[in-house]
Image: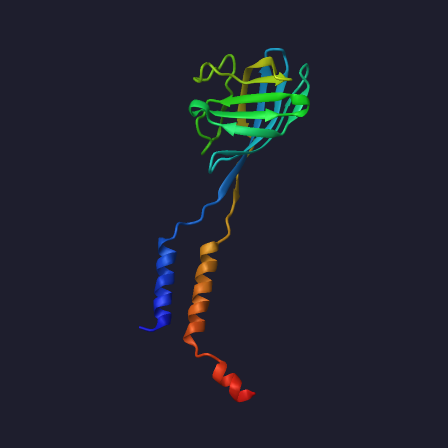
Length: 184
């Protein structure tokens, strides 16, 4: 068999054995809740539910707390539950605990509160200012704002196969060196 046949067979083998690309599913969740001091939790949290990562937060704690927006965040998994620790202006902090251990395939849930305590040492969500606890969340939840948006990945395998087929075609033809010398 010629070189080009082997290259084509290798290309087909790569195409069959390569993992298929997947699309990320980005979902936005509305956050709502009430704190013990009467402050209201509002805003959104954006989660990539295909890999379980929080991608953005835009949260507020309304009157009487009036702190926010909380846009900087750190996501962690203490004892198998998801925690989202957000910070805002002036050292304010909003700590949200979700009962869900993983956010892969997440579709919304109650937030851990004083009435819906999580299993991690009875943990609950709260907000603080200057490092001091101001109020614990009495009740709250995350509900999906709409259907997730699929973010397609580039068809890299198609590009690889097209490049290899082009290379196979180029190897099949004779070099042009001899033809160029005759024309010159």
